Image (cartoon, rainbow, N blue to C red):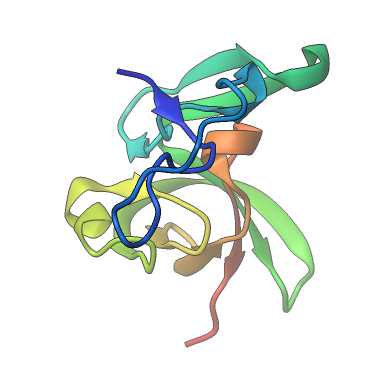
Length: 128
């Protein structure tokens, strides 16, 4: 069964709306990428509206971490997902989303990019 992001067919009271228009392709949704922390890197390229392409990062073990003190950026390996406000179970499953706290070689960092949309993990070092 597909994911549809259009208006619900039911009212808040449980009654049915009168259907005026059919479902459109622009209302279609997709499953989330749920970028996992693994040894290899895997991406998926998806065609989206307007003929554009979206790069979904499915698996990775590297992140581009920026140090705000020295204003430098390094590609470092990710060892663990420490925190994730999107879902508490993502920590146990090592799923990386925007806002997740990851443990790297440089220390703890907060993810600033959307790996499931941009295809890369960018993070900023957290001062502790």
